[in-house]
Length: 109
Length: 284
Image 1 (cartoon, chains in turn brown, yellow):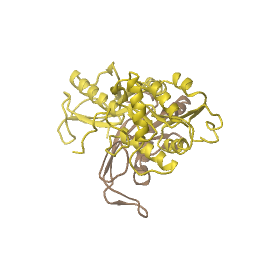
Image 2 (cartoon, each protein chain N blue to C red; image 1 turned 30 degrees about the vertical axis):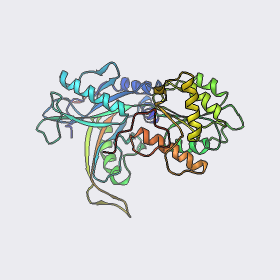
Image 3 (spheres, each protein chain N blue to C red; image 1 turned 180 degrees about the horizontal axis):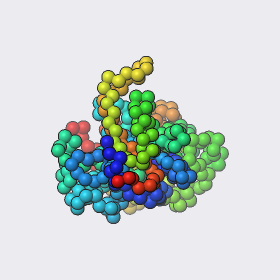
Image 4 (cartoon, helix red, strand yellow; image 1 turned 180 degrees about the vertical axis):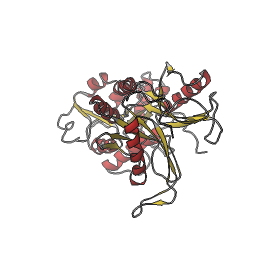
């Protein structure tokens, strides 16, 4: 957890945008821990994981939007019958909270 | 998903980040309260809403007083177990589900420093134990007065290796409620001396190596010296889970598993004498 916040502080301190993704809940046979977390940086780099190939592409796509507009979002990823690659079988539902860690201009109203 | 024009509910992010880093550095945990989503409850867009601090409650408030109160209670519970938790409430703080017509859903995320494992004694059990502890993401400290045992070469995975008199080191070490202690020195008299110093500390776990007979003797002399039985509640001796461990590495695995069992509320069988501890929750 030290490293998670250190990463945020380091990137935010350079004026870069940072988005975080945290697993809120998990149903079914998805192996993710509640509280598993991942960071997305402006340059495309990441830190941590929310569960690998099964979900990370979905989370990454949403994180790109968060980096762009600074708005937090919740994401529910349905993993039932999602089979990717050899033996990489996930199932269930994963709830992920994404939010921005860097202040942006006030949202348009 | 939040419409982009909704005003974010987040509190000042720079202040929250500073609070998190301070909580970790000072080992004084806090809880972040994040809004995950709502239906027919107006709290803004998902994001960080408030910070819970022990003794100070939730700031700023969230929704009305009843919801703030319910969230503070749930945050305290999440802090007690040290793990994040999702909760769903109605606008007036009653328990709700995502099938209800109106709800607000939150993530309670305790910001807790890594647990520490203080290994007293740098011998043949300490070595594999320090490696396992690193994998389990404990901040690991090894202390022994023998510099040819307590050194970086023997403990590359430890966060701190201190070659100094054990009693001096313990006198200056702030044992907190997230510090697990393992007493594996080269002689029982050193284990006992360390135990005497650590007794009454907030450590959730003080494991001490030794046979049942040896442990009985140590407890007997300490009780005769005026230590109260309740002071042994957090002492686990003989150390480790009952997995038939034989080699130093296996004993280290039994110790590490005992600590995991304790942290996660498992129900594995411990080798330790239990007369000074309340019975664990029954396997109902």
